[in-house]
Structures are given as C-alpha cells and as structure tokens.
Length: 244
Image (cartoon, rainbow, N blue to C red; front, top):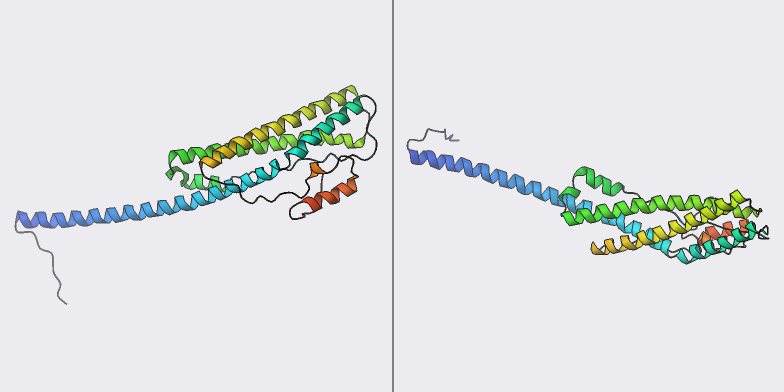
C-alpha cells in the first residue's frame, strides 16, 4: 500500500489550496455538528410540547368534570343557607341530612417542570412559553381554591349533626357558607379564563368522564349509609374510598 507523505507547499498557490481545503473541512464539520444539535433540540421540543399539552389537556378534562356538577353545588349551598337559618331560629332540621362536598383533584405540573428544567421550554416560541406559564399559574390557583373550598364545606357539614346553633357557631357557619360561595365563583371564573387560554393554544380537554351522581347531587335528606353507597355508585369507575 502506497503512503502519501505530506509535503510542504512549494508555491503560494499550493499553500492557499491546502489551507482552503482544511478550512472547508472544518466548516463542513461545524455545520454538520450544528445540524445534529438543531435536530436534537427539535426532538426535545417536540417531545416536551407533547407531554405538556397532554398534561394540560388532562387538567382541562378534570375542570370540565367539575363544571358539570356546578348546578348541584350551587343548589346545595342554597339548601345549606336554609338549614343555617332554621338552626339559628332554634328549629334545626329534622330527619337525616347529607351535605356532601364538591369534587377535588390535584393539579400536578410534573411534565411541565421537567421540560422547564431540561431547557426544552426555553427553545419554544416566546408566545407559547407565556401561554404554558399562564395556564400552569392558573392551575395552581385553581387547586389552592379547591382546598379552601373543601375547608369551608367541612365546616358546613357540621349541620348534619342537627344541633341548635349559638351566636358563635351561627357566625362560623355563615362565614363558611360565604367562603364556599366565593370559592365556587373563583373557580368558575378561573376555569373560564383557562378555557380561553387553552383554545388559543389549540388544546382541548381530554378524559372527561362524567359523574353518574356526584356527592353534592345526592338529595339533602338522604341517610348517610345510603348516601355513601350512592357516592360510590356515582363515581365513574365506582372507586371505593372513605367520605368525610
């Protein structure tokens, strides 16, 4: 096998030809490296976008399920107001009482945070980044309001004990009722804003599995043991777990 040993350029022309060849090779290598890096970044963005949008879509589905029970929640709060008025007048309601509580789901952001920490989100268009950020901020606020709402309903469920109220307990119940009404309004407003933001990003709700009968939709004067059975039967997958 013949080996071609490098030799020094004998003329300036040969020198510039060899130099041009080397520079061209380096430039080609750099362009190829950048192309590979750009392809990798593109794949990371595509995967991150799909994960984020799936997570958002699932949250939208949960919020849609909640909105399907708003009529029951509102009606139950009106019924609770009547119970408070009766108890305040020294005439607590007779017979069994079931207050129930609205549905609640955690709003996780694991996929979004993973994409942020990996740097994939920073590679997306600025409008898209802002859209995702705004949505996840709203999800956090929505879940915080859900938790406040559950605390208020826990106070309202003391009416199931059918005791005459004192001035202090009457004030506490009326305060809890107002907190529950305010939370319901805040969540409804947030859900509307989230829906509009999601539409601008062309994201639709997913996994909307309606309740057959949600806790607040069970008639007010239902015995607890019967109400618990109805709650389980009304869940989409008939999941069995304790009720407060």
